[in-house]
Image (cartoon, rainbow over all chains, first blue to last red; front, side):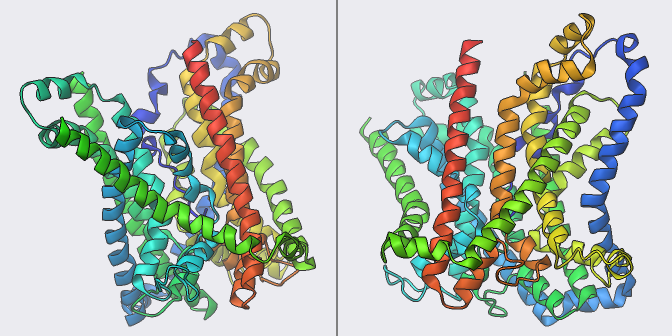
Length: 297
Length: 272
């Protein structure tokens, strides 16, 4: 389960995740005198740990990319292979994200509003892609769509094959973002609208969909950035055909294998910027939605 | 009434068909392929010397990564949930950062930092400690990608319960350690267990990051996932399927633990 992004809306809606500020804080006099030294020691240890594990390696990428100068950076990210890999990555990611949103919404709906035998099992199975190692996902896709396909669908080394693998690994993200929000929605308004003569579709588009929009967006953003970052599940089904199935993470790997460290660093920065932009945008949208809710309450 | 009846059933069956085609069918096919040549064949594929060496290596990595991430995860969660200090928001963002980074980029970052030509290359060149293409590289990658899991599960629990009980214990004369073992740890145990399971599953299943920093020698530096890839690339399909089924077993254990914990949490909430 490479880059398992937990479908946790709190991840990008920090307002929800940090009610700590409103919690009763112990009176200063009681603990502060004894604990302030202790706290700063813990902050120091934690900061050191995070720096060595996370920040230093990422700084090394920036340092390597900057070391080659602006021209080398520009050459690396505008080379034919780099541009093609980005086109493939972004193109397939957009299609898969749209699929995820449509079916994720339907799945969440069925899991919350519908009732049938075996619903609990479906609910549990949804998380399977999180739990499955990505290389296993890759083999699963090959077993189904590879050259010995039992259903005679041959998608190996084709963009739809890459798309199927990405749709598999991102399947739970939208479902798990939308499901809790749908559970919380007050159904009185819907019933009132229905009793006033609005039909099912109208109730859905004017009442349910607007309240689900932030969580749908969250799920879509998580799915998209997961698609952009994915490597393990697409590596064998895609087969790295340049301009067709070679995604950017595969291109970065071949750059490192050819010892083009500056090129790999430059491409990494491009991919990281895409993921960060998506996540920052989500934070902003999530923050706005939370504020609106506060006003409404 | 009839139109909503049809709509409801249409959505239900379309969704079930999607999940069936996307999830259930692919996973069943690999199980079927694994056991088609018989259970004996499966057993011999997962007990070859290379497979056992890979299992050993994966378990060694888990044995180092999981305790480290549990200890630092709890420490970080306590800080983020309880501490009031400058840079708290920054700390929170750094903890969430690994989710946004592709495992391939994690590999690139570690190579550029610790590799022999990297920024801290002196560790390998002068001190003779091989990090990239050695065990420390595998461990560093795994710590990076699993860093947020424990914090993500423990921090919300800490915030929800507040500090009243801990303060009460402190007032009654309990020391910080005693309070932690008797009050804090029991409170966060379910979150901590789930975070630990997530960390373990992800460490065992990590592929993109480890393929970058491993020398990938069978029997020496191949983890389970690398061996799956290697076997498939060399045409030993059934060997790859057998190991995949083994790893899938881990995934199923994960799902069972998760479902059990969810039921327990619901019960605990209902009891309150």
